[in-house]
Length: 276
Image (cartoon, rainbow, N blue to C red; front, side):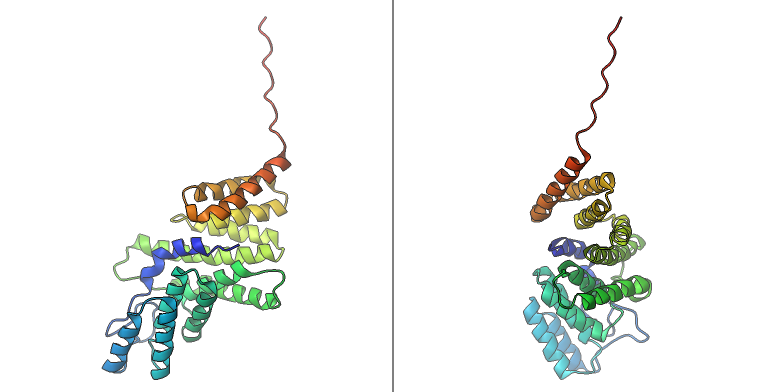
């Protein structure tokens, strides 16, 4: 199942966290010294590349900039821009490729860690020849994001404490969701349930119906039918007003019907005795 449409909606709140670099520094992640262009020409070329739009165009501009300035501290910001543009175009393969380029330059980049883990978990299949490698990467990236989000993620300037907490909570939720979906697909339903429950509790700003749907499946597999039905109903509550989630809504309705059939008809209320 493709879960990226809701991922995009969740990351709309984070899109402002990849701003263009100022003349003196970048603000995407803390560093021992502010990243900056070494020459005015490098800075001008960076700004020109960053102004490009569209995933393919930004990727090409980033590659050209990296070839011209192979030691530049600004390269990761251009690949992050390409990653976000491919995100907006619903191109998970290219998102993954750009995310990996960001991580090669900035291994602690919280958004790249979470997005790459999400894409891999979403596409994980039993038939994958590299399934074990994908699982290892999901575990590595999601866990590293959880371990470093407090120190490696810097929100936009002028963010309120409430906004900062929301940004970090969304990242933690998505990391837990990626772990939970990976465990679900790998047959570890109990751990999947634990991770997905935590993911759901962390994401109060923009509840993700995919979390609740997969949580319902994990509970169903453990024969926790009442809990599964409650989770599926939560998923349906969050899909009702979003026409882009029609496919998920159909799957959730099918799962709800299955769970209701398993539970059987509700017992009839006992009849009141006749008055004497």
